[in-house]
Amino acid sequence: MATRQIPLTSKRRLTREDAQRVTRERLLASAYEVFARRGYAEASVELIAEHAGYSKGAVYSNFESKQAMFLELLRQRMEDDIGWSRELLASSDDPAAILSSLGDRLHEFEQKLDWCLISAEFQMEASRRPDIAAAYAELLRKNRKSLAGIISALFRKAGTPLPMPAQEIAAMMMGMVQGLSMQRAADPEAVPRGLLTRSIQLFLSSLLQK
Image (cartoon, rainbow, N blue to C red; front, side):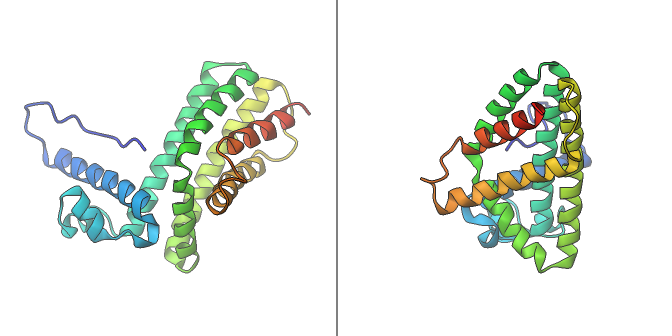
């Protein structure tokens, strides 16, 4: 996952705000690597701080908790995906070309399906923590709404009426991503890489042809 970096090659002295931003981004990069390697449950603030080369206090001066770090990583990941999709829609009016490019993007995503499993771990904890659950649900709502806007734009370009509310299509697509990633973790041979890409392309193309 790409994180937003501040160039460090300049000889000018970093302002306090820049230094804090650098620390925050390094901590997030460390958190991403620790979550990916250890899973959500086994990752800890101590491990994240140690991996980044900071004290535990540096983490808490930038984030309230491990949960807050994970939510920020998830927000950035969703924001990056939505931004890429909007750029794709702006670059072409050909639905077939858009679906082809989407397939390329999904193929890259499928190399990192473990992140979906980590998200599932987080969701289990959130289900037992009302404070976390509310923040997580709000993040999903925003992502679903943004994805629905992209879906609506795709159908307009194709000249095809939506067969159901765009947010419902968005929810179905998000469910396919999470469900197939969990099935792959349990039985990789039955859910090979590429199945998610083909499934979403087939799902969207069949709706666009109605």
